[in-house]
Length: 297
Image: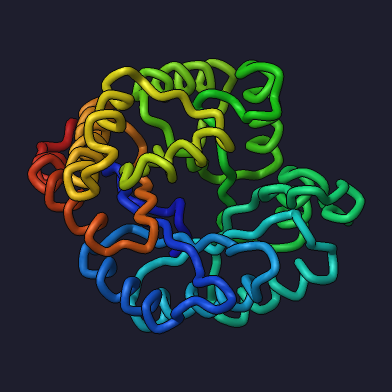
């Protein structure tokens, strides 16, 4: 089954990343085993850090998720460093392994490298999407940015580009992480107003340490609401308290989103099973209520 072929209930999914070149592969597979017990609708695997054998590792992890854990995998692919031959080879390998869903993105630019050094046949995510739609039968996802991509001049411009991607054949969208639900609601309303009608899954990242979030916010452009900033400032020197507060904040975000009819929740677990467990437990009663709610004919 492909990622977008699911029930009317909101989806619940996790995202993990491959180990770095010298990383502990055993640990990531233990992480996958641990988070699989929460029965997510799918687990996505990022394309890994630049310079690592990330394509093979991502494929191996997705294969393990599908064959050994019985969960749908979502394999990320990026334009950076890719050409038609390498992408076609990867698509062949995915089909051979029975992996039918992929998230296609431009990918993060390498610092200090020119566009000519980073991009070959695919300059933008839409180029990769067009190629996939023309040549394969995958469920295709794309990234979106509730506050606009950091390189776009405005949210309106970014939404126009997003509509082009969706019209090319995107089946679902996953947002960059955000900390202000009102930003997401505004984005979703604007997207629907211009006929972006595919499911939009809300990406949620629990904060675990201040320096990590500050760095990621600088790269993504996500804004920090006052309530969130107070959490960072009050608990930055108490790792345990900050983790508790961060998980509670993310859980509150998710409960609000579920109560507002979100299409799905995509949890960035940062390869930490404890994050997946605690957030899942915090929202368990909400999910149970949604499942038991009488269907309206």
